[in-house]
Image (tube, rainbow, N blue to C red; front, side, top):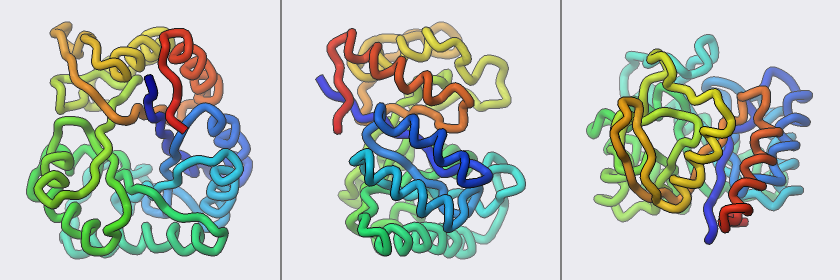
Length: 249
């Protein structure tokens, strides 16, 4: 049994952070590289792509609200046309750097507050899916399983990769517990690893309120901004293998 593991990378402050990101790469199958909205510089994007190529990873864009001050984790009220223009500028910048290095982008995954906002707002999801289908028809879209982006993508026959989170609590099968809620981020590594097995195999697990959830995903997110991410990535690989699951490379 195989499962895809994705990780948000290129979000550090300098090139030294790319070295830490590179330690994660042998244990994942795809990376989502920040492209200037919440983090990332041309130098960091370039180094991240070079490292991803060395590790044979699928490479994707990780755009966000244009809000570096809040690391893209605050919802912004901005005209939709400006938001869509910003998304294109971010993806285009990464795509151009990738092309210059002989790489091709595979997918797009939104970041932070924009990811959450699209999953709870069907009109916003529809607008973004329409944009991505028009401007980047060959790129797959990663988004929360069972939520608004998946439904919008299905209506436009857009390839969609259903994502699950090993280190976040769920309120329902299509809603994550906001980070503002106590315990929304799972800190205990053992619990994260067990959640990964449940998501990979479509097994039951408890939501934030202790109710049973069960659904399938195509990819599991490992957050790269956790200081322990390289260690967790190795442990995840070992735990999956011990339970009959390999990482889809």
